[in-house]
Length: 425
Image (cartoon, rainbow, N blue to C red):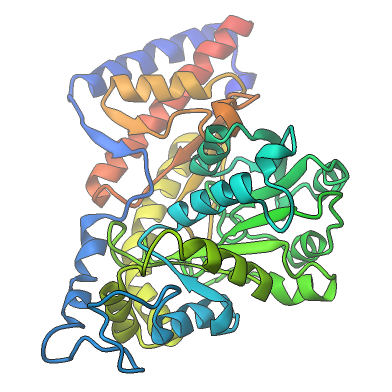
């Protein structure tokens, strides 16, 4: 397969005709395939069904203290569920709050609380202009939260080992910069894990804003798809060493471990932050779904139970990721028009095409029946400055459908790239 940029104008025109014909054949198939969101497939959901039987009349409805989980109360989570998340996140149970099913909801709520009541200081809404640092490519829903509250987003480029720390360290000198959203392990969408050096530099930040908060969205902390697991430093001890104990709020959930719509979310934070959050929570709820917490705690028992269970997910996900990676390599590997990540975990593959081509690739895929995450969604305000990044979500479709969708995606990348090169000649 030739490198496209080295082809003559005549060769490019001939190739464009060939690719266009192949694309029209795909359109005639009337496909309806979805690679737009990182949803678990039905086969993943099925392996969790037995969790539903872990709490019943025979096993009882009381937690280890004897509390009846069918009733009101226990604001911050039952002990065994707090202990489970504490083991996963490597903190003390007292530094855990267990919430409802959505960590995104907990993140939104925390930002809302900071806006109206502050983070140990004056409410953000009374401080004038508020800004957040946003490593990108990143998670579109993080950006959506910030845009909803009118918080200005500052794009920070992602490097191979995490966000560009030189840019972060410079920007935190501005007192209007109040925080940063990030996915530190198997990042969305690139699947990168922050290096030890990056984690240490984040923990050692000296922001001008004393109420600066790092939203540490550790969504994929146990989501390995390769035997080569990435390791992420525990940031909390490092924060304490740097007198930054209150700077980081960590979030996670079982949304892609058990049931996305009926999992359990949790946050980890310092003693001060836990006390502040619990005080605010007492005005919101009399307690989250403790039966669901009890189900999860009994089913997994401890972090070892979670890790063993996650091998079942990996057995389903690894072939799907490999199918996409093989397709990318076989179709685009020698063309010189694309590059992509090969993550050891998480839920996404990040594809970079030629500058100025991502939106057109996504549009052609959509017209032929394959839905992708909207091009640009992985950047603040939906604005990818190079228009090159496409997030691939391999988890939801069955493997046969996934292969077909990946073939179409590669075809569209080639077709759009060739057309761009023809225009430039």
